[in-house]
Image (tube, rainbow, N blue to C red; front, top):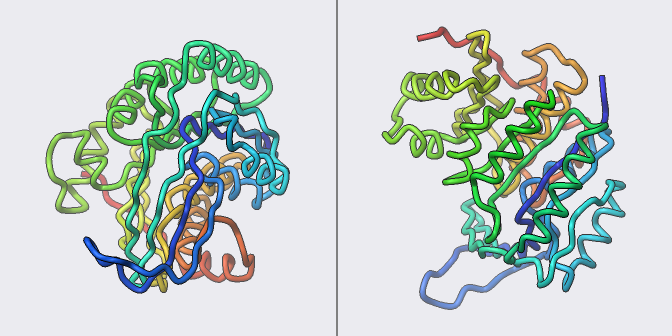
Length: 315
């Protein structure tokens, strides 16, 4: 077992989250409460892994003009900061959370990363590979980081025997899949986009995931919202998890929380059913709160006890 893990956030953000009764498109909307927090998928994963007890190192690119909030946050979490600072300011994304639970994301593209910063990051990444076996690469790519380059990093880490958990979308996901990461977690829409056809049933999701398995990916987790998740492994076994019905406050960070749970479970050599149960319960708890993190271990244990795990028959 190991507690050491690296989370990679190539395009972090400061999330400006506003809570309001309802978004009035084209008119004034009044925000009832707000918060500005360091975020990005890999940063969110780092928070949950740290709460679980992992020894976390965070890396990626940060704008030097507004790095202070990130510096303070990483110190608060007790994680090791290996981010490369670049010229400019880290982007600010806006998330408007309605009382119904609907989230309206306004995501900006991020800072440009030049060749010098890319070289510095690549050096740092493979220095970390000398004494870390788990890498979570999550989120979008900033301008200057091409999908093919990200795929090269995944491929090289895999060749070094590292377990890479990869969670991205669009062109980055498409290229990254070709590099055979150890685990991916597409949702139904991302899976449909990759295979080029709509997926209207569990069976169609299975068929699409089988195509990905044929690429040589060891673990494929398909998230289906309130219907839970399906996990297919290279040995052909399918498991499905369905959490209890939750009162949704915000879905922001729920997927990142799930990835953190799967990573931690494998680091601790958990049995498959318990690994999926933990990750699903963590994700279910995440939708009941604003922001990521484990706020109540008693609630987490209760959710684990009420998360149903079943075997899905192969097709």
